[in-house]
Image (cartoon, rainbow, N blue to C red; front, top):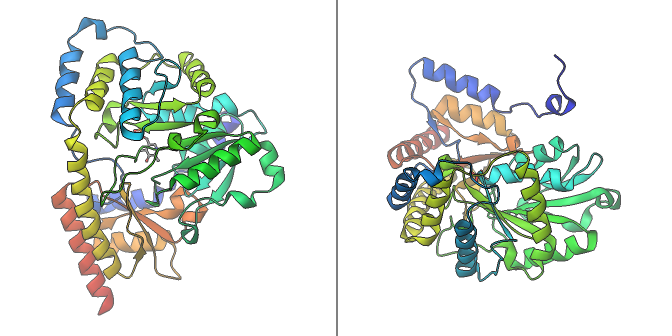
Length: 391
Ligand SMILES: *Cc1c(COP(=O)(O)O)cnc(C)c1O
């Protein structure tokens, strides 16, 4: 068997070493607390599950769904965008449901990237932007997200030779892994830049509803002209704790949405309709659950930040997302510090370099552990901080 070049080029799984260590510890019966995974621990709200249950019994939902999704779901998405962001979307042309946003994020490269083309990809970032580009035969040009710049990419210093080949610009706010947010002024700058260089902007925004201290993140679609230059990916996963059900959406530019629909119609057969019905219930039903979940995450965030800072790590207080992005002590790598926390505190974090070179020197803590495990993890971190002070 000879594998394709794209398979050979896939980046190695960066967490091999740490996964092996965790497995060894568990085999020895040691309890390990993982702040590694960004997957809400709180169940999907009951009213959404009830709708799913009911819809699953309707034989109309037992057959192949349409690629473009149920018209009622597209309408519910457009209405939600209007209520939440005051953004107008045509439900039939500017909204496309996805089998989780990851699916669309991976596939959209097939709409814009030919071999030799370039995608502008933030670093650190969710790995799918670069891998989708690779699968389409293109290359990623990385835009470092630095703390000095509020973890926003510097669009003013990209070489002309790169811009000439660039077709797509990826952005993601509220950001995973840094927890940074973007103001509408940044999104306006992105629209201007995309027009000038004829790019499709792909904004990945699954954390727009996971925010703290009363902060309300923006949609890229709120920037004037955004719909002319790009699309926004969104998801039910983080807003409604629905990661397991696999449903998300792309909205925005009609031609881009249509191209993605055409790619998908040749690859998948849509989202199970009972799950689409559950998603409609999520958007149309009571929204108190969103605020309740955010209050839980905010409490965890504050407890964790206290311990992180006591341990001598610097971290910005995130206003949104499910993550705390902390800088490790000078002279240590992300991998060193990750190993040390596992060995000396029995806790797992994600090494920042797993999200790209510019993530070196950082670790990511996720806020998605059940309260008792979370509290135990914070306790271990505090004890570790004490021990490292008085060795
Ligand atoms: C969780 C996450 C997604 C994917 O969400 P799904 O809709 O569950 O596929 C996309 N982008 C980022 C940055 C995420 O953290």
